[in-house]
Image (cartoon, rainbow over all chains, first blue to last red; front, side, top):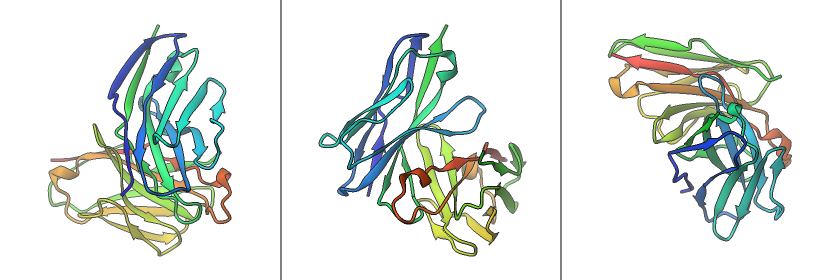
Length: 116
Length: 118
């Protein structure tokens, strides 16, 4: 069975700092996808960034980037120049395969607070 | 923009009641999902559906059933609510991912329904 582990239940940084959220996963599959989702307080969950396992290049989306270490089964999220609006729950998620109904396995979540 | 709506933001029910949670998406997505979110456990998949009238069990289907009579609507049913079903329930949808197109695999989430069973 695939599992996803986020070892940091809560994190807190000052505005404009860089913060890294950790995620590890376990799978015997070779073809899979990894995601970071963000859930702001009282707002809907949205996709932050995705990574295909067959791509060696780390994905980036503006201030968000990942450090994907396939051999170590690690997928961390780095937020640069953090902003107050980055305060949210962050979930790492994993999906096997390409086709099908796209079942996601989620980690436990990390509550990130950006302080002014 | 994709819109996923859920019938209620907050719901309070009594033990033993039959509870219906409704989810509607407006983007003609084939796939729909129901999750429950609990502190320290993240999101866990209850049921999902990849087509009208089709359903598959997720990781924690016990005590729940689902219905998908129309493509845009996916209902979660608690046949006899219990206190351990107090939770946040999230619905999501996504388009069909055949052909391996990464751009089609994003799940779009609704705002959630916080259900309290007394």
